[in-house]
Length: 269
Image (cartoon, rainbow, N blue to C red; front, side):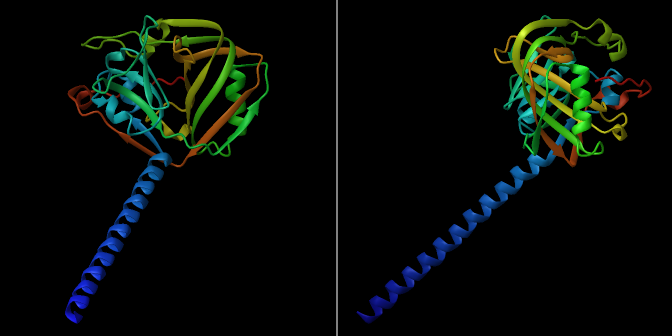
């Protein structure tokens, strides 16, 4: 009986040690997972570079499925400029040149994008009435420093908005953004509510990204979207913001990027 008790004790001790080890492992796994999420939330991610985009690198190899691992908000353009991209709550919307809005599928490819996990650091209010130019000036005055990066996810109720799309292109790419943007499709709407998704890059970013503020819009009913060109509203705007101090980008891995001549410069926001 004494030997049996000793054997039972050994088994119980082994089980306790095993459970403790498993529990410690689970805790470590959860801590690692939290660390990964935290790292993601701190990074301003970019696919391709502005200098390449300006110089007709209009085919990319970033899949939508991969973009969704980089953030829950984002903006950019789909492959061959086949639609402006605005990502909200992890959903990547495609706004084609005819105004049609669909959800990008995991296998769809993107030529250029900014994305991040929006983790609100603060907010402020811009009093109406206000237009887009005045709105951007207010953002500049409210920034802690113009040397950091910022992400915005701003719900708005607008009296008027003017949005730009992009014209789809085919190879060989002959025209750059300096030619394509002046003839871009334009969409206008009145008395509309939705969300502005945007980013700010400091001027020292140079040709890696477009400096200043850059916003895309998606309406609440998902019928209107695109690059923000103008807006007006009588309403106050509450502006949640997320300051970013980490920046990372991936480059396209294809012949177009490998052989491009980076000789044209062009900036807009």
